[in-house]
Length: 324
Image (cartoon, rainbow, N blue to C red):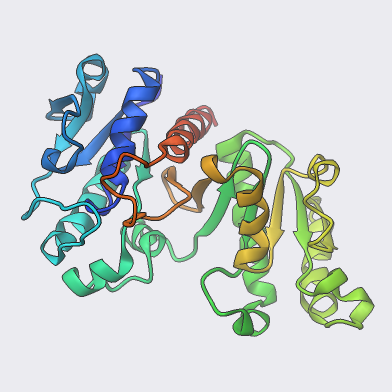
């Protein structure tokens, strides 16, 4: 039996509070989790079961969404970010990490934040959510995985302009990405011998150097190094042919070279249930694969399926890690 999953509130003016309430209603007690935030930010009429610590979650679940209260300076108006609340959003993340690292919570699931709001309202110094979690955990390098039932993908380079990908893609970066991904698939997903497919960067995976030399000079030597270490790894593969159903059956994860190369296939296959997983942390962290959706916040249109999938994946990963 895993410890309850901590769900940080994220940006209170976005859809985070709505999908938290929706996830509690749809899961109907099947998965123990608790929300950390200000109860005033939850949709009107949400049944709330206040708790003082995560040990009370299972008893509270039948009565309402278990809430570990964290007061915010201001109420939240859906769709309208209030800078007064920025520091509290950051504090909730830190509080959730403390609970997971102490063992009081079994895993961390994070609702989306608005990075610009945190920079303007709380002088948030980190590029994003993941980098802040890595700093709190004392980890220098983490990897982003997007996962659904049909596919797992890992982008080697992430939030940079396409024009900078080639110069950023180094042997060291690709090797780190492969090693962290391999270790996480073994430890957190229970795959003893992960099959890793590596995409090329250029069209047709460079076509022997006719369309670029990154495959020859960077990607292939790294793949060969890990083949020599008995990894089940192959490529570089043309990215336009490696994601159809038959090809996907041949690997457990795809290592892509840049953001859209990884995210387009997974969002095409399962837009509503994609999960963002951070690999390389000393604790399990998942998140729904969408943003704060300020444009639909408070309208009753928010879809909790990605959050539900993120909570379920966090529970499975935590259980697998505990058995390792």
